Length: 153
Image (cartoon, rainbow, N blue to C red; front, side, top):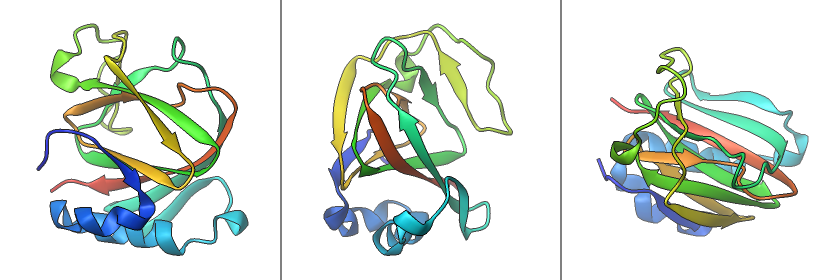
């Protein structure tokens, strides 16, 4: 399993299919979904193995974006409309835990600040592995996103 995040356009998703078998199902959903007709919330792709969370959110700004990481799932964060700014740092560099790891939500939050920020424009995605702590919604303005959760085996 790779140890660093990926940022690319959805048209290049095929380049990453060999990294994990669940990525193909996740990218297929992103390529085929009629997002304008889907409600915010959870959308099943392959039960708890692969699913999407759709949301319309307002950017919080870099100072308010909280850094998080996951253990059981990787994230494909795809921007449908707008632009997201997502902070990144290696999970191994996170030192100041803000909340205990929540197994049900597969998430822990940190007080640490990202070491890098990436702009994820409309039509682009970022993949975050458990080794990638990330802080979504670090920009401003409204963003419509799909976060596809892929269970790691």
